[in-house]
Length: 80
Image (tube, rainbow, N blue to C red; front, side, top):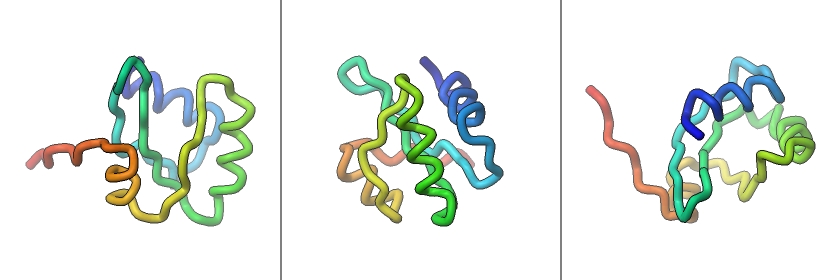
């Protein structure tokens, strides 16, 4: 599964202008992604994720850097 497919799934279950897929990594055959969403929408987003068997949430930290560290996802190279 690639970035386009994951974005499509996320947008279908929770259409929001604030939703952004930051990172997507495949680790040991599982696809891990870091999603940014407005704090005011987090609880609704989590409820929607629970209803979709393709998705599972791990953490709701406010810092992308901390989530990357916790999941051992390397920081992507910046495209300039």
